[in-house]
Image (tube, rainbow, N blue to C red; front, side, top):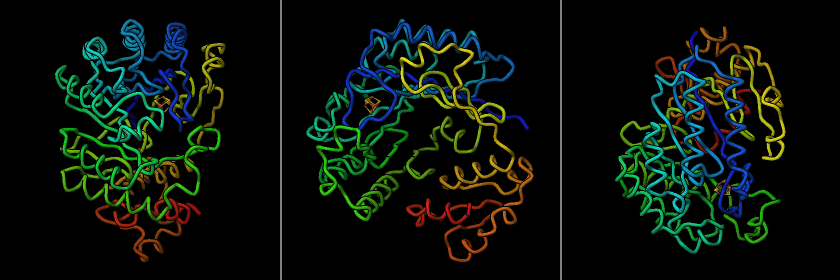
Length: 370
Ligand code: SF4
């Protein structure tokens, strides 16, 4: 069975650290050129022209903070070492403050056709408090500029549960819903003890799980009233503009991955890179895949189910059997019970979590995979 192969490239640079960040990212941009060279060496080592690449995603970090010359180097390597003739979607994550005409020109010239903006909130006081460098006005200016440069497939990320009032959050969702965006991602804030915001936004000031669930429901309602279909728990697309790259992950597709902390899935092997920039830079390209695991058919079937249940249209039972030799109802013996209880639904050969049960998907998965 032929897989769709995607490429993920991690750019671990940002102009400043956000108060909640646990990603692989550093603010020393003087290392960016050296990093791009290491990425190119890695791409050369894992070069494969036999598989047409389906989607490309530059994430971070903040890819938009790289100078055009460095981005050009990375795109050239991609074209040199992979078959890019059939790429249908190329996304770059951008922060508003680094979205300049030079950047947009460079991205457009290199075939980028989707941008993902980290907006998070439209409330400037919130943005400041969480350490973001942009203002809401800056986001609107970056968005308008992107449209001017011909980008019309644009996502905005927002965060549920930031240190702001519920009405600030609702205003954020209403604002993005009113814009001409094609996609919105809404993730709940996860605070880790090692981050500065963990201390300045103490436990007793944070939203309860119930309050977060209410805010999520409101977001779903506002977005759906404005033509955004929820196709994954946290992702909403207008006019069918789903993120093909992320869908490939959720459908257990295959992907190359390059750069610090990047995880990939090639053939039957899942692998991860060294997390920190320094470790990445001192590792030889041939040794980059520091954690490798070969997945059995059963493990892959479980992953397909686990990831697929996050999608509104769930999993394809026939595909599961054809691809992994796995009969869904035999392999997951609690499935029938969950269907009877209304936690799963089976229709036209697909099994999925009904939309009003999405908020308990993790518990449903625990029961199903038990
Ligand atoms: S922009 Fe993203 S990666 Fe960079 S510091 Fe903020 S949260 Fe971390």
